[in-house]
Image (cartoon, rainbow over all chains, first blue to last red; front, side):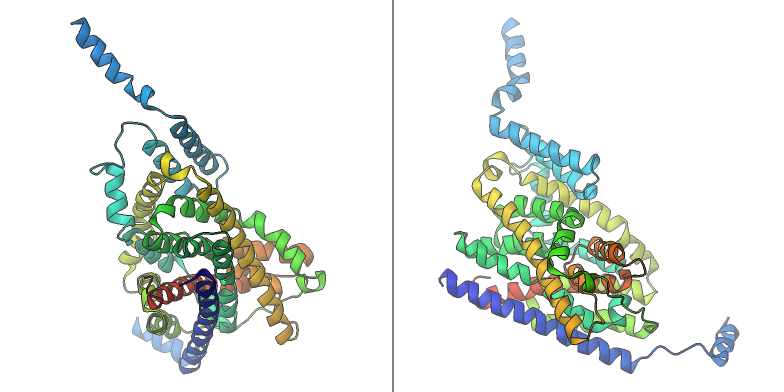
Length: 53
Length: 379
């Protein structure tokens, strides 16, 4: 394969692939955050934790 | 009797007789690396063993890189097999906190843009007459990520391992000098003054534990050849976030990277033999490597400007420069530059997000490159 073809393939697929892959990861992260949100500390939770001690 | 003494004396000074000017130059280069590491504090953990390895391997008749030499053993068992960079990644993963990135996932895109310079440098290297695999090895210096550069180079251009590693680690320490002028040229004063709001949102522990598992599965399905790198960095991070293997985390943060860094540095130094290092290709690698980091920074900032435009001024483009790996130095540079133009500006956490994104991005870019090479029949 000649250098021009190699350069074009590597650049387009490399840059595009990296961008698309990381964009997919942003979706994964967003989905994880929605599925498992941080629960604010409530008096009941705190009491539960203390009882667990 | 006299003959025996003469013969012994001759053997004792044979080292001086076998010393060539090229070896002397390389010993001086090794000493320069030692000076940079010790006196200037430039990446001393690596430059010190690399510099000493370069001195050792260029002393004549020591046989350190001969078939049964000590440095050859380190090189063959740790670098050629790619074990050393992968073990270092376990440590990096164990030391990295992805929470700033998880708080604002869109910042991960800056970590992608921060790798574009790699691919632009490959084109330049090809235009300058380098072979395709050599061009890939040179381009990956732009990842600003030493273990990734070593991993890729040891697979596809092992003869360039010395210059690529030296460039990757020494330029990484030059990030505070290289980036600010590019930041000033590519951004307006108004953009540099943009205050990014602190996010109060907290990320649950469950998300932090699931993140490395999900990233490993997704990225390895896309680019299986990057699995050793991404797998190890995410294993380290999973150990850290799980909170159940504190002994392993301690080893991954301290003992493992300490030992591996020493052996890796010596092995890289051992590749800097005069007959292999002193040539125009080395100069080309060093020049293109610097260009790769400059292009990466520029692309990250330009993407930051795009995000600033899309979000109607909520993103300070300076954090785009942290999209290159160089963790956590690039994030600190963004913070310092932001505060220079607006004292009330605290970009550090956002820049840390972009910086950890850059780490994931550099490994992802390398994995994609390796998979493309395999697809083209070159891997």
